[in-house]
Image (tube, rainbow, N blue to C red):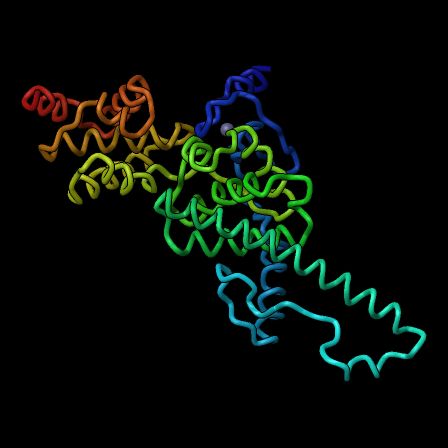
Amino acid sequence: MAFKHAKREAKCPECGCTHFFEDESKGERVCAKCGLVLEESMVDTSPEWRAFDEDQRSKRTRAGAPLTFTKHDKGLTTEIGRGRGELFKVRPEKRAQYYRLTKWQKRLVESKDRNLSFALSELQRLISFLGLPRSVHEEVAKKYEQAVDRGLVRGRSMESVIAALLYAVTRELGTPRTLEEIAEASGVERREIGRTYRYIARELRVRILPAPPQDYVPRFASMLGLSDKVQAKAIQFLREAKKNEVTSGKGPTGVAAAALYIAAVLEGEKRTQREIADAIGVTEVTIRNRFKELVEKLGIEEEVEKKVREES
Ligand SMILES: [Zn+2]
Protein backbone atom coordinates (compact mmCIF):
# COMPACT_ATOMS: atom_id res chain seq x y z
CA MET A 1 0.00 0.00 0.00
CA ALA A 2 2.73 2.40 0.96
CA PHE A 3 4.41 1.49 -2.30
CA LYS A 4 1.34 2.36 -4.35
CA HIS A 5 1.03 5.67 -2.57
CA ALA A 6 4.67 6.54 -3.17
CA LYS A 7 4.14 5.82 -6.83
CA ARG A 8 1.24 8.21 -7.06
CA GLU A 9 3.35 10.93 -5.46
CA ALA A 10 6.03 10.68 -8.12
CA LYS A 11 6.58 13.65 -10.38
CA CYS A 12 8.00 13.67 -13.87
CA PRO A 13 11.33 15.51 -13.82
CA GLU A 14 10.74 16.79 -17.33
CA CYS A 15 7.25 18.26 -17.16
CA GLY A 16 6.13 17.92 -13.54
CA CYS A 17 3.18 15.73 -14.49
CA THR A 18 2.11 13.24 -11.80
CA HIS A 19 0.23 10.82 -14.01
CA PHE A 20 2.00 7.76 -15.37
CA PHE A 21 1.40 4.70 -17.46
CA GLU A 22 2.85 1.60 -15.91
CA ASP A 23 4.43 -1.12 -17.96
CA GLU A 24 4.75 -3.98 -15.54
CA SER A 25 6.40 -6.31 -18.02
CA LYS A 26 9.26 -3.90 -18.48
CA GLY A 27 9.17 -2.62 -14.93
CA GLU A 28 8.97 0.99 -15.91
CA ARG A 29 6.75 4.01 -15.77
CA VAL A 30 6.10 6.34 -18.63
CA CYS A 31 4.97 9.92 -18.07
CA ALA A 32 1.47 10.35 -19.44
CA LYS A 33 2.18 13.84 -20.63
CA CYS A 34 5.64 13.88 -22.18
CA GLY A 35 6.52 10.22 -22.56
CA LEU A 36 9.63 10.26 -20.43
CA VAL A 37 10.55 6.80 -19.15
CA LEU A 38 10.98 7.02 -15.40
CA GLU A 39 12.27 3.67 -14.33
CA GLU A 40 14.27 1.70 -16.75
CA SER A 41 14.90 -1.95 -16.38
CA MET A 42 18.11 -3.33 -17.74
CA VAL A 43 16.29 -4.84 -20.69
CA ASP A 44 17.12 -3.03 -23.86
CA THR A 45 14.06 -2.91 -26.04
CA SER A 46 15.74 -1.39 -29.04
CA PRO A 47 17.12 -4.38 -31.00
CA GLU A 48 14.09 -4.56 -33.26
CA TRP A 49 14.45 -0.96 -34.12
CA ARG A 50 18.10 -1.40 -34.74
CA ALA A 51 17.50 -4.47 -36.86
CA PHE A 52 15.11 -2.50 -39.00
CA ASP A 53 17.70 0.20 -39.21
CA GLU A 54 20.45 -2.10 -40.29
CA ASP A 55 18.28 -3.87 -42.80
CA GLN A 56 17.50 -0.54 -44.40
CA ARG A 57 21.09 0.47 -44.32
CA SER A 58 22.36 -2.69 -45.95
CA LYS A 59 19.67 -2.47 -48.61
CA ARG A 60 20.69 1.06 -49.35
CA THR A 61 24.34 0.21 -49.28
CA ARG A 62 23.75 -2.60 -51.69
CA ALA A 63 21.85 -0.27 -53.97
CA GLY A 64 24.81 2.03 -53.83
CA ALA A 65 22.72 5.02 -52.85
CA PRO A 66 24.37 7.91 -51.06
CA LEU A 67 23.50 7.93 -47.38
CA THR A 68 22.82 11.54 -46.60
CA PHE A 69 19.41 11.58 -45.05
CA THR A 70 19.05 15.29 -44.91
CA LYS A 71 19.20 15.62 -48.64
CA HIS A 72 15.89 15.12 -50.22
CA ASP A 73 15.45 12.12 -52.56
CA LYS A 74 18.62 10.21 -52.13
CA GLY A 75 18.28 8.54 -55.47
CA LEU A 76 16.19 5.78 -53.96
CA THR A 77 13.06 6.47 -55.89
CA THR A 78 11.98 3.30 -57.57
CA GLU A 79 10.02 3.48 -60.72
CA ILE A 80 8.23 0.61 -62.26
CA GLY A 81 9.70 0.35 -65.67
CA ARG A 82 11.72 2.97 -67.35
CA GLY A 83 11.38 3.47 -71.06
CA ARG A 84 9.66 1.27 -73.62
CA GLY A 85 11.87 -1.76 -73.16
CA GLU A 86 10.18 -2.67 -69.90
CA LEU A 87 6.75 -2.71 -71.47
CA PHE A 88 7.59 -5.50 -73.89
CA LYS A 89 8.41 -7.78 -71.04
CA VAL A 90 4.81 -7.53 -69.89
CA ARG A 91 2.18 -9.77 -71.46
CA PRO A 92 -0.38 -7.79 -73.53
CA GLU A 93 -3.34 -8.59 -71.26
CA LYS A 94 -1.35 -7.30 -68.35
CA ARG A 95 -0.38 -4.04 -69.94
CA ALA A 96 -3.43 -2.07 -68.81
CA GLN A 97 -2.82 -3.14 -65.25
CA TYR A 98 0.81 -2.28 -65.69
CA TYR A 99 -0.04 1.24 -66.77
CA ARG A 100 -2.34 1.71 -63.83
CA LEU A 101 0.35 0.53 -61.47
CA THR A 102 2.95 2.82 -62.95
CA LYS A 103 0.67 5.80 -62.60
CA TRP A 104 -0.29 4.89 -59.06
CA GLN A 105 3.28 4.36 -58.00
CA LYS A 106 4.33 7.62 -59.54
CA ARG A 107 1.61 9.48 -57.68
CA LEU A 108 2.59 7.84 -54.43
CA VAL A 109 6.22 8.74 -54.84
CA GLU A 110 5.35 12.29 -55.75
CA SER A 111 3.11 12.82 -52.75
CA LYS A 112 5.65 11.25 -50.43
CA ASP A 113 8.31 13.51 -51.90
CA ARG A 114 6.22 16.60 -51.45
CA ASN A 115 5.44 15.82 -47.84
CA LEU A 116 8.99 14.87 -47.14
CA SER A 117 10.50 18.05 -48.51
CA PHE A 118 7.95 20.06 -46.56
CA ALA A 119 8.87 18.19 -43.38
CA LEU A 120 12.59 18.53 -44.01
CA SER A 121 12.36 22.27 -44.45
CA GLU A 122 10.45 22.56 -41.16
CA LEU A 123 13.15 20.45 -39.57
CA GLN A 124 15.86 22.68 -41.02
CA ARG A 125 14.15 25.70 -39.50
CA LEU A 126 13.95 24.11 -36.04
CA ILE A 127 17.55 22.90 -36.15
CA SER A 128 18.88 26.39 -36.76
CA PHE A 129 16.41 28.04 -34.39
CA LEU A 130 17.43 25.72 -31.56
CA GLY A 131 21.11 25.78 -32.51
CA LEU A 132 21.37 22.02 -32.85
CA PRO A 133 24.25 20.10 -34.42
CA ARG A 134 24.25 18.35 -37.77
CA SER A 135 24.19 14.93 -36.14
CA VAL A 136 20.76 15.70 -34.66
CA HIS A 137 19.55 17.00 -38.00
CA GLU A 138 20.52 13.83 -39.81
CA GLU A 139 19.16 11.49 -37.17
CA VAL A 140 15.76 13.20 -37.04
CA ALA A 141 15.57 13.25 -40.84
CA LYS A 142 16.37 9.55 -40.95
CA LYS A 143 13.83 8.62 -38.30
CA TYR A 144 11.19 10.81 -39.90
CA GLU A 145 11.54 9.04 -43.20
CA GLN A 146 11.32 5.70 -41.45
CA ALA A 147 8.18 6.89 -39.69
CA VAL A 148 6.71 7.87 -43.06
CA ASP A 149 7.64 4.53 -44.60
CA ARG A 150 5.86 2.74 -41.80
CA GLY A 151 2.76 4.85 -42.10
CA LEU A 152 3.18 6.42 -38.67
CA VAL A 153 2.69 9.98 -39.82
CA ARG A 154 -0.74 9.31 -41.30
CA GLY A 155 -3.44 11.00 -39.26
CA ARG A 156 -0.96 13.13 -37.37
CA SER A 157 0.49 16.51 -38.10
CA MET A 158 3.94 16.50 -39.66
CA GLU A 159 4.93 19.25 -37.20
CA SER A 160 4.10 17.15 -34.16
CA VAL A 161 6.05 14.16 -35.49
CA ILE A 162 9.11 16.30 -36.21
CA ALA A 163 8.85 17.90 -32.76
CA ALA A 164 8.48 14.51 -31.04
CA LEU A 165 11.50 13.12 -32.88
CA LEU A 166 13.55 16.19 -31.98
CA TYR A 167 12.61 15.71 -28.34
CA ALA A 168 13.80 12.08 -28.47
CA VAL A 169 16.90 12.51 -30.62
CA THR A 170 18.35 15.54 -28.80
CA ARG A 171 18.33 13.43 -25.64
CA GLU A 172 19.74 10.39 -27.35
CA LEU A 173 22.65 12.41 -28.74
CA GLY A 174 23.47 14.27 -25.54
CA THR A 175 22.17 17.71 -26.50
CA PRO A 176 18.82 17.71 -24.72
CA ARG A 177 16.24 20.42 -25.27
CA THR A 178 13.36 20.75 -22.85
CA LEU A 179 9.84 19.96 -23.89
CA GLU A 180 9.06 23.63 -23.38
CA GLU A 181 11.79 24.79 -25.75
CA ILE A 182 10.66 22.39 -28.44
CA ALA A 183 7.03 23.34 -27.97
CA GLU A 184 7.84 27.01 -28.27
CA ALA A 185 10.04 26.58 -31.33
CA SER A 186 7.65 24.29 -33.17
CA GLY A 187 4.35 25.82 -32.15
CA VAL A 188 3.12 22.35 -31.15
CA GLU A 189 1.70 22.01 -27.64
CA ARG A 190 3.66 20.07 -25.05
CA ARG A 191 0.88 17.60 -24.52
CA GLU A 192 0.62 16.95 -28.24
CA ILE A 193 4.37 16.41 -28.56
CA GLY A 194 4.19 13.94 -25.68
CA ARG A 195 1.24 12.11 -27.19
CA THR A 196 2.89 11.83 -30.60
CA TYR A 197 6.14 10.84 -29.03
CA ARG A 198 4.53 7.98 -27.10
CA TYR A 199 2.93 6.62 -30.25
CA ILE A 200 6.05 6.91 -32.40
CA ALA A 201 8.23 5.53 -29.62
CA ARG A 202 6.03 2.47 -29.30
CA GLU A 203 6.11 1.79 -33.01
CA LEU A 204 9.77 2.53 -33.59
CA ARG A 205 10.93 1.15 -30.25
CA VAL A 206 12.72 4.30 -29.15
CA ARG A 207 12.62 5.49 -25.57
CA ILE A 208 13.18 8.77 -23.84
CA LEU A 209 15.19 8.54 -20.68
CA PRO A 210 15.82 11.55 -18.46
CA ALA A 211 18.87 13.42 -19.73
CA PRO A 212 21.76 13.58 -17.28
CA PRO A 213 22.17 17.11 -15.81
CA GLN A 214 25.70 17.33 -17.26
CA ASP A 215 24.22 17.39 -20.76
CA TYR A 216 22.61 20.75 -19.99
CA VAL A 217 25.70 22.39 -18.54
CA PRO A 218 27.52 23.63 -21.68
CA ARG A 219 24.44 25.30 -23.12
CA PHE A 220 23.29 26.82 -19.82
CA ALA A 221 26.83 28.06 -19.13
CA SER A 222 27.01 29.83 -22.45
CA MET A 223 23.54 31.34 -21.92
CA LEU A 224 24.88 32.79 -18.66
CA GLY A 225 28.23 33.83 -20.10
CA LEU A 226 30.17 31.58 -17.72
CA SER A 227 33.73 30.42 -18.38
CA ASP A 228 34.96 26.95 -19.34
CA LYS A 229 36.43 26.67 -15.87
CA VAL A 230 33.00 27.09 -14.29
CA GLN A 231 31.58 24.55 -16.71
CA ALA A 232 34.22 21.98 -15.88
CA LYS A 233 33.73 22.49 -12.17
CA ALA A 234 29.97 22.16 -12.44
CA ILE A 235 30.34 18.91 -14.36
CA GLN A 236 32.78 17.62 -11.77
CA PHE A 237 30.27 18.40 -8.99
CA LEU A 238 27.55 16.61 -10.88
CA ARG A 239 29.69 13.51 -11.30
CA GLU A 240 30.43 13.42 -7.60
CA ALA A 241 26.80 14.07 -6.74
CA LYS A 242 25.73 11.22 -8.96
CA LYS A 243 27.95 8.84 -7.05
CA ASN A 244 26.09 9.92 -3.92
CA GLU A 245 22.73 9.61 -5.64
CA VAL A 246 21.77 13.20 -4.90
CA THR A 247 20.55 13.87 -8.37
CA SER A 248 18.43 10.83 -9.24
CA GLY A 249 14.75 11.51 -9.77
CA LYS A 250 15.27 15.27 -9.69
CA GLY A 251 14.61 17.46 -12.70
CA PRO A 252 17.95 17.53 -14.53
CA THR A 253 17.64 21.20 -15.53
CA GLY A 254 17.28 22.29 -11.90
CA VAL A 255 20.23 20.16 -10.84
CA ALA A 256 22.39 21.54 -13.66
CA ALA A 257 21.38 25.10 -12.71
CA ALA A 258 22.33 24.56 -9.06
CA ALA A 259 25.70 23.02 -9.97
CA LEU A 260 26.44 26.00 -12.21
CA TYR A 261 25.46 28.40 -9.46
CA ILE A 262 27.87 26.73 -7.03
CA ALA A 263 30.71 26.52 -9.55
CA ALA A 264 30.25 30.16 -10.56
CA VAL A 265 30.33 31.31 -6.94
CA LEU A 266 33.52 29.35 -6.24
CA GLU A 267 35.25 30.61 -9.39
CA GLY A 268 34.41 34.25 -8.65
CA GLU A 269 31.87 34.54 -11.48
CA LYS A 270 28.80 34.68 -9.31
CA ARG A 271 25.35 34.95 -10.86
CA THR A 272 22.34 35.32 -8.62
CA GLN A 273 19.84 32.46 -8.39
CA ARG A 274 17.30 34.84 -9.85
CA GLU A 275 19.50 35.50 -12.91
CA ILE A 276 20.05 31.81 -13.45
CA ALA A 277 16.37 31.02 -12.99
CA ASP A 278 15.37 33.63 -15.55
CA ALA A 279 17.93 32.56 -18.13
CA ILE A 280 17.28 28.85 -17.89
CA GLY A 281 13.57 28.75 -17.21
CA VAL A 282 13.47 26.92 -13.88
CA THR A 283 12.10 28.45 -10.70
CA GLU A 284 14.26 30.06 -8.04
CA VAL A 285 12.74 27.70 -5.48
CA THR A 286 13.96 24.71 -7.48
CA ILE A 287 17.49 26.11 -7.72
CA ARG A 288 17.49 26.87 -3.99
CA ASN A 289 16.38 23.34 -3.10
CA ARG A 290 18.83 21.61 -5.45
CA PHE A 291 21.56 23.94 -4.20
CA LYS A 292 20.97 22.95 -0.57
CA GLU A 293 20.99 19.24 -1.39
CA LEU A 294 24.12 19.51 -3.52
CA VAL A 295 26.35 21.49 -1.14
CA GLU A 296 25.27 19.31 1.75
CA LYS A 297 26.06 16.05 -0.03
CA LEU A 298 29.30 17.37 -1.44
CA GLY A 299 30.30 18.66 1.99
CA ILE A 300 31.07 22.16 0.71
CA GLU A 301 28.32 24.11 2.52
CA GLU A 302 30.61 26.36 4.54
CA GLU A 303 33.02 27.06 1.74
CA VAL A 304 30.21 28.09 -0.59
CA GLU A 305 28.32 30.13 2.02
CA LYS A 306 31.48 32.06 2.79
CA LYS A 307 32.09 32.83 -0.90
CA VAL A 308 28.49 33.88 -1.39
CA ARG A 309 28.82 36.41 1.45
CA GLU A 310 32.11 37.70 0.08
CA GLU A 311 30.77 38.25 -3.38
CA SER A 312 27.49 39.91 -2.51
ZN1 LIG B 1 6.57 14.25 -18.22
